[in-house]
Length: 335
Image 1 (cartoon, rainbow, N blue to C red):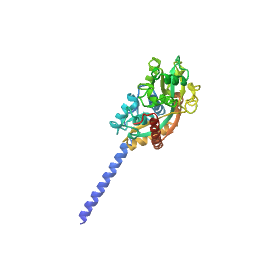
Image 2: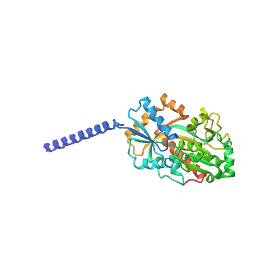
Image 3: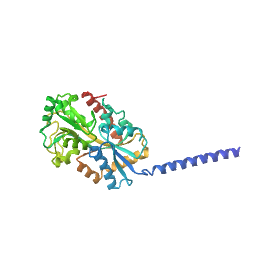
Image 4: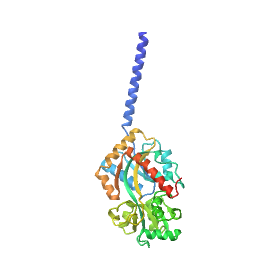
């Protein structure tokens, strides 16, 4: 009897010892994250808001030494972000080393009728909102259009005579920014001639190359072209005038268009990101937004700071999803 009890006791002690070792090993392994280089994907071409945001994060993390592993930015354009979104939501679902910069298209592409993406923010792990930006309606410096109303009146008379371009797919963010003033002006948004490009940089190139009459893009991404004298901004979608190179540009409201559009940007992890990686990035991003280096990036790019941690960002996305559905429904573009 005693021999049997001793055997059971020894077996129990051995099991507890192995479990403790296993827990220690797991903790030791998790504490090593990140063990290799990290990739942040901008799902568009170079020069647009996603690309600039990803590179600003990488630069700040490197300059501040907050993260000592190498972080690289990869541009993966296609479908206004929808092409890579499908890959991220399926093939990278457990990859702690693949992160994604996104903005309202993660909601828009999932809710619009045409070119719909089956994947949305619920197929990711939101990590943080980092910035707030606005839309801008832009023409070449020598354009015949002097005001936003000039554009709208011309579209009203002959919709096919004006080509509007943007760096996202039909029904996505740039398209909505561009047709929102038209809709509020009494124009059927479906009649507006819209051409999509993969990223704001390509849309600007189309404008400068004469392949578009007007573009809708991020206000923060256009300042350099305004400074160089290549373009003019007719209006911005903010509630108040912006600063810097766009200080003299009127808002939609000032142009008599009762509309606003906010472009937030944030960082996302894969849906099944490990708790260790999730906690790691939550901590690093919270520290990053307080650094002078990050504040310098905000100023350089003309962004406004708007930080929400992972929990608050997720709640915000749920609310914004409802707003996007309402807007798409009003424009006749909801799925």
